[in-house]
Length: 334
View 1 (cartoon, helix red, strand yellow):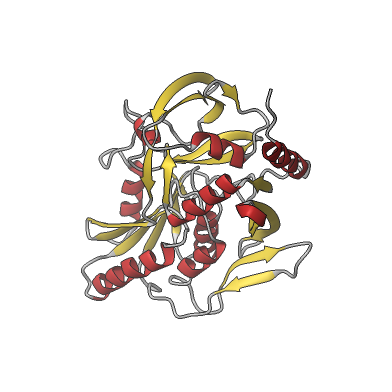
View 2: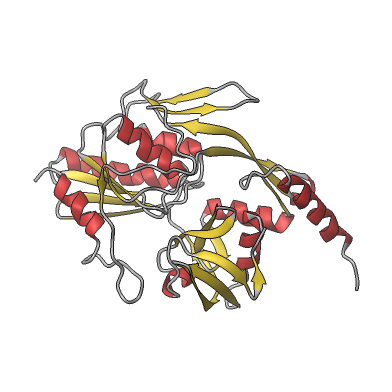
């Protein structure tokens, strides 16, 4: 057997970092680090599913819209037990991502577990491009679907907010729905920027607490553009991290009602460190606390109004069967 010394070094570093027993602190090889950066840019090749860790198991936080994963019937909450026949037990999140990613046109076999039952699917990878913001209008209501908090989010948000504000001031719409379902998060600073459009200057958005650096309060430091528009926020178990900061701060300030189901429950902050030769290290440096004092890690955020969606035979929710969206529309002024 020919040994690859570089792979052995990377493996040793991964093992050393894993002894910290924090699923969100991990070492990335140059390829994995490049993929992580591509995620935040909104472009990569793979199956199109955001992954997370639950009970130290690889879990699907959310399949991306119109992705190979969604078309194959993969759903939020599915555990990935094996990839091409190799068990994922003890895999880190970055390992799972690197194994599942791959060139467009190549196939991958996943062994999934749903409700205690295993099944296997074969998926053809494709080019995945994620727009952060998708704005539409339904029954005189602005519906803004936010897919992630990445490199382009704030710029796309600004464009959408300008359109919403114009229609609101012209009395062409009666309210707004912010859809954070299946949004796995991203930059904490982006969630602060977005929350600031709905809250008053000086309002606390989130508190960052750390044992190694001074705590920091993120407060609104600018004039919001959507301060008085009626607002409902949609969340589900695929809403994680920065999504929970945004939803939780709006809930705590009684700026919006939350509709849907309990969110994922990730309450820690990671610093991304670039190392030599393109490698990287993601390190948990703090936890974040919502304005009312909640640390939702492992618990998630409960909505004000719980509504569960039922999927059709293709494991999808159509506009006609989206009970969560329908409830949000009902809660806005007539």
